[in-house]
Image 1 (tube, rainbow, N blue to C red):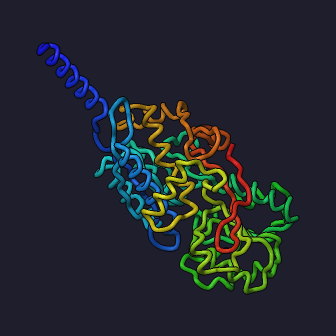
Image 2 (image 1 turned 30 degrees about the vertical axis):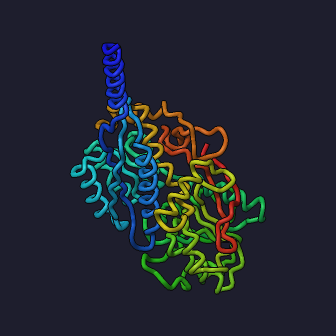
Image 3 (image 1 turned 180 degrees about the horizontal axis):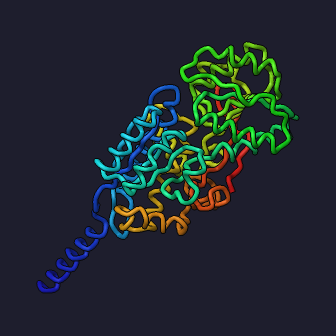
Length: 395
């Protein structure tokens, strides 16, 4: 009897040791966030940071996530690149070479995303930028994954919808005098021409740091287009441009293909922003699953308020985690293992209601699957909040 008791204790101890070995934390995975967290476009990078921090905490509170039978915790390291390519390069070098990070979320515009490509390639790292330059995602490039809906994907859909629903026939574009907004304007003009719209203005710009938008908007308003597109507009510039147009007497439609901050629109433009159309986050109440709702609660607790764009940027770390699960431990040090696993990722999408999968998309645009599966949510500003105009998809 005493022998049997010892045997049972030994078996139980052995079982506990085996279980403990299987579930013990094997270590910590560092995830970098590099983006604009100050200045006119600060909300773009801050939302990246907050989403990554919240998702990491949710996983860490559950004991991490499993790769090849071992659990890993997540540490987030964030750097403000101030929307400056030189600062972005320095930030990428710190994350890759000093911190040993293989997976970075950001940057937020074309110039900063392009600037860090050599660092990624030489240092063996990957990133999920929020930049629209196709060369970042098209062969031979392979280290970047588009983290949102691009302007050349959303623009034609928005214009066509407004042509059908509001009889839009003429369009005018205005952009900040920087390469990223100007590139987006170029793509928007091409889409408008392809749809047969009468493009009344395609060269008008304003300088970074502008606060008086009456001069540039005066010329646009005089043309009286059915639709004014604010190409690549930063969240702090949008309400000032909108207000200037309305005070100049413009009564037509206004839109942008970049995500906006409803709080800034409400505080600065107020009722003048009514009807303003923008690409929104991917988490309208009608399409949010329970996990997305839980994420939203945690985000609000962490930040103090919800930002619509968080519904898009929550996808980045989720996709990195799901890909690491498929790729195995080899991908912790070797991004080639991560790349090889990307076509095999087909996980349950807990962010959307219905039977949806987390898979990489974008082959039709980039000749390879280098885009996150973000729903194309288009919003309209009314009564101090965003209301969903329609929902589509890249595919």
